[in-house]
Image (cartoon, rainbow, N blue to C red; front, side):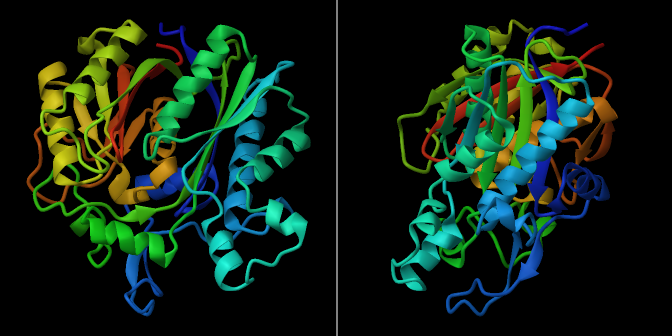
Length: 387
């Protein structure tokens, strides 16, 4: 029985599928992408592109923008979920918010619509610290609260930071939230210009990780929260260990020999004290770009036994940027309890290890990799809460 590590005791989610954890899961098992053909993204903002944006919703009392509303809604859902599963908060509950870009829409309006003139209260709402502060006030939590930012690897980085806090005795519990609602037309257009995102092709045509014909990723949004604790029962899964490193090579590209990515995988297994032969699944970064797919596929083939399968949910959820790895950790954790990996359908010739459709889960370990733009490498090792 795997009982060591940090328990993922509650999960909340706001994604392109809707506001709630069950909407995310139901969307994944439907095998239908969250992205919709959405207007307002072209050169003159009159063209439609495929994006997996979070729909309008949430409580207006949580903030003026979808960012604050989604952050607090996902965190609240995670706490309610953990409480229903038997968690009781300790004296020192910390908050880690994984974020790369905060209130993108409100900042845009601040300059282009409001002319830099807002009430002080509304101006303070633009800061990523504000929804954190109001969240801590709502629940009366007094542990440390801070942001974590490592591009697409921010969710993994937040989980490993939370684990370090818990093991050092700095906190009794941690609420980890990763939020990215930044799909303004201007942001999307720059990822298209970089050649890593696709918008005019249907998601399963454009984004095919580890398959022939993949062109890149569909852009997505999400806020995902987890309650993390050492002693609580009712966990979905356990975070056993992990590692982070940096390529120190290029602002967008991976070192072609990828020594630091390879080392990050090995260090994560060593930190978790697990054997590669016990890894059943690699929940990959898998954005569908040529360099990332080649890097991860090569390492999986080098490091893990033939029965280890690989998958990426990005064709379905979209690439949720700063929230991406948190979405994918949540999917793996839910999969342990529901005993299935909701992998996207295979639509082309693929790597022989690629899982597709609903694949049964019967124990085994999961390695969750995330390669953030600019060289941020991160790998987390997850295991079932019980055998």
